[in-house]
Structures are given as structure tokens and as C-alpha cells.
Length: 88
Image (tube, rainbow, N blue to C red; front, side):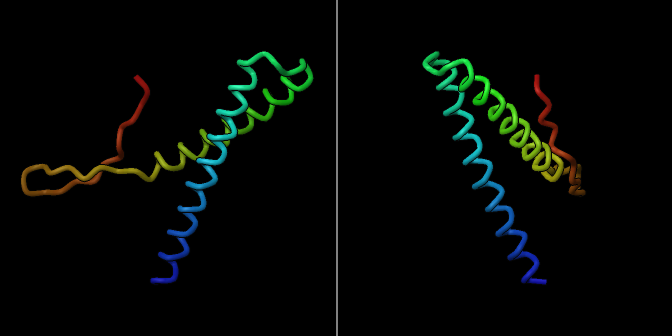
């Protein structure tokens, strides 16, 4: 049982690191596109890569959202509810 927790913890850390790398690359792409210094062909390639990264990052966030919950106290009972983080 402990090995499973360690593996899941390691997988979670890898997912976070990958997410951070993807976000960093996406920020770099946005900066390059905003700088208007790339050729049209390079801009299109960067745009396609950015869309792919954005979709992958959104999928990661969706997965995280699906497992995040909040413990609330209702009288003497503790309830676990899904955290509501909808965009406003």
C-alpha cells in the first residue's frame, strides 16, 4: 500500500513539473508572437505549438479540478465537497 502512495506521489510531482515546463514554454511562445519578430511561417508554427500546449495544460488543470475537494463542517458533521472554482 505504501509503494502505491509513493508511486502516485512521484507521478503527481512529475505532472506538476511537466505542467510548469509547458506553461513556461507557452509564455515564451506568447512573448515571441507578441514581439512580431518571427516570420509568418515561424509564427504559424509557434501558434500551433502554443495551441497544443494550452490544450495540454487545460487538460491537466481539469484533472486536478476533478480531484480537489473541500472539507466543510456542518454542525458536528464533516462533509467533503468538490471545490467550486468556476470562472466568474
